[in-house]
Image 1 (cartoon, helix red, strand yellow):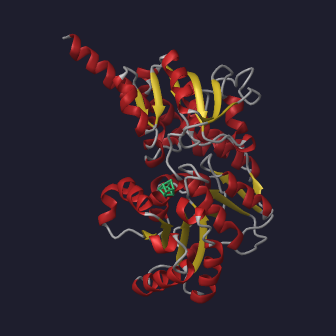
Image 2 (tube, rainbow, N blue to C red):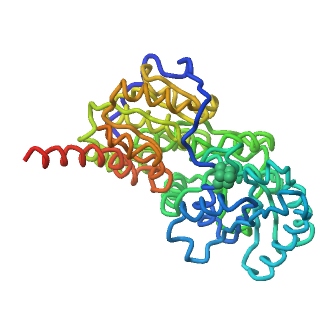
Image 3 (cartoon, rainbow, N blue to C red):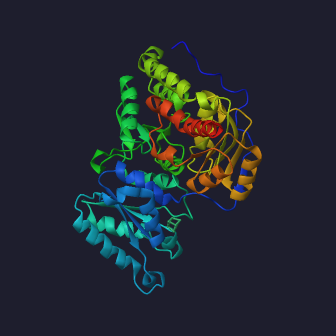
Length: 428
Ligand code: SF4
């Protein structure tokens, strides 16, 4: 391919001092991860051990999906459990036995901790161990925390995958592992491109069925597809697996560099790499150029939400011509994020954590052309005349790799175009 990337910045953000804030948060808890995880893992069931609040959160986040016999539910802690009058472990055993008797299709069960279960110190790890022994070999029972005290939004997926890593068998096979729950069509594209380069065998975590699982060992090479999988990354390191560091596969550049890092690890030639990627790269460039016309030269401000913020700021500044004012993320894991931070030109404030009032003041002072934030802030900021993009869509919409690069740029340019159209109509 003759067209090259924009050269990397002379000074990236890797050494920019991070503004660390602690205060009021406007974010989801990790339970929301269940919404996309249960669709991906088709023989798994997620049993939240929590309160009515947790059940309401899942119902409202899942929308119409709750009518389709989903594979998640909440075991609601009643007052007798909270007051210590009932043996919560026994109650849980009863609920799980009933559930598994009714649903023989369940092959893996996740007990998901919540704020109330953590506050009363209900030991779900112990419960999972006991139930695994009881229901083996038909059902595997694991536990993780999705509570708001411990996890923010996408960290729920991280906690779930990290819980699976220690129970996968040992292997010495040289395999590529793609880590992160991607929509099926996106996953197929990634696997297709890598296989076309002759790379294999390729495994994915999470696998769609327990029977598709594989081993992990020192010859497992893994690439993360999502930036929030930091505990999973550390769990894989503990098993001796080797991380392929790369920018995350958003946009044409991110996807090419991500594929390049894997191709180098597996000894793919330049010619083969070009043969496989030239056409989709050209398509992606064209689509991004078209979709980003409305946002070129405009400024963007990210509130923390999903940990996708830094790679997306890199995509918007380098491929769509935007200028980043502030890039806020709930957590910044330097080792996982360094490839993206190196490509993000020095300039924006890099913020970790949140003190929402202070951040709102900075946002109002900067008056960015586009503010990426959660639903709780979006409408109030729109009412103040700021244009917003709901961050949650970036997690639920297929946005990775070449074929989605134009759609990704479109997600950011749509609110800007709509605002321009409304202004025009108002002027008429
Ligand atoms: S886990 Fe905590 S933050 Fe999440 S819904 Fe339940 S009570 Fe609320």
